[in-house]
Image 1: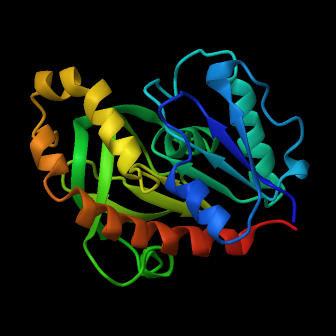
Image 2: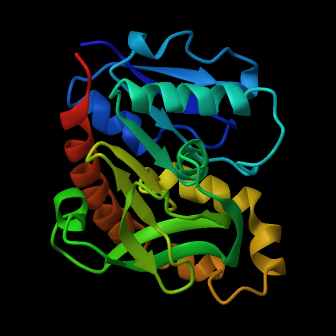
Length: 234
């Protein structure tokens, strides 16, 4: 099978558990580092699927690679090459599909409980609800007009959508592992302290049950990834 393309925006937001899961299941991938000035995939045909990771920038920023990336996502959707977007990646998928991305009602940092909005959610996330997943964002997406909303949260209503049973946009970070969370706690300490959002947790609350929360999160991530790879192009 052709490799999965992974688009990485910044050094401290790599594929983490997504790469671990792919390695465990013998699936190959290629990481394209936007932060290192690497080029996007020349042709989506070269890849079995397209994963877009998160980052601190806005999906609306005029970075030189954003419009080409949106074009690549649209090409993937037209050719049935499955796309999966984590946080910023979900926002970019939404934008590529014609939906608005803008300031969220509340910034979210830390663990949050999400509930399904559609019966299809069980297929993607399993039957154990609510989902307890990690967040770090200040913007959010509208649901594209031809997509189906799957999850909602207390402070951010739109948490996941799917298009054509294949392309998945997520507002949360199901790909986090311990190293990523701890690094973000250090690099984002000032942001956490300065925030007045009711959806931003203190560092001690985020880390209080980190091992247990990661086990739960990665169990859900495994369900998500297992469902998503069913659509990979050979």
